[in-house]
Image 1 (tube, each protein chain N blue to C red):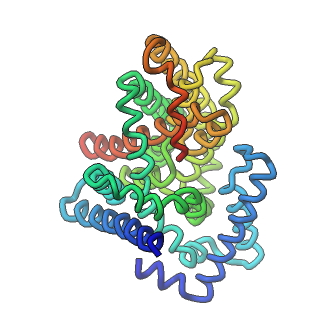
Image 2 (tube, rainbow over the protein chains, first blue to last red):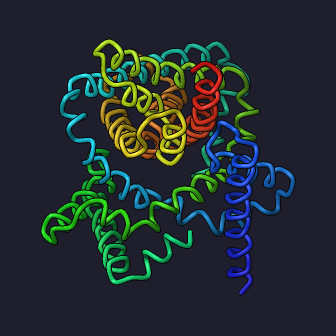
Length: 134
Length: 236
């Protein structure tokens, strides 16, 4: 019973943040997406009331794990742009495959340089921080 | 929300929602069978099954989108729910300090900028160029911010997913090419450049890699989703 109540509180927190975000963005004509402001509102709520983490976790862990399902309608909608994709296929493939590979390499390269420059000290304990698994 | 629920509570709504969920469950099973190979990502298999269903029942995509609009609508609340993983990464971010932030920002700027440059050189339409800018962040955030800057959300979803798959597939080769042996650096790059799909690859590589990938995913997601619309509203 307690679990059901926690899940409901967590769900309510997410939806309140969502609708508040939409409302504020709309009222103040902010240039950011409403759900993104909702995310920040929920983040602020979590910092102010750390006990809320437990409730939110109960509500969102399962949907977050399976959020891929929510993209299906959008992904299928891409067929409407099939003509454009075909016309610019080469450019798109280069933009995705080549630049993603290079970005991956250069990002890892720089962060290795930075992290190694601080070899001794806290980073040597990095392995201890692998326990948050979301 | 009312409209999404209304669409769902019809014969078509229930039918296509069920087909989507069953396809997704099959996709999860198939993905496990392929030991979680990134190219067998559940979303690809699910999309394949649903398109087959559309093809054989002679249903148009927009009819499916209306029937399954509840799924699409839930993208908003799920974006808000991302606050939880971000909240949980916060302490770690403070712990690692500026070196981590600089790495993530470097990757978060480099990946979209180089992709945009490639499209710019090939003179593709600006809507596609703008959409590409969101390719390295997690799908719900990418769809939100691309629609805000004159991109195409549906295309953003596809670019994001393909980027993630490419990143996860090439990761090991690229890391040995660039001589990156530091596992934490590998994790940061995977999460920052290849978002959630890169992070699932990182999970297979080990807990320490996964933790850093999650950090990269969260920080870059917020950073890019916030920066894109703001920069566009200021300068364009």
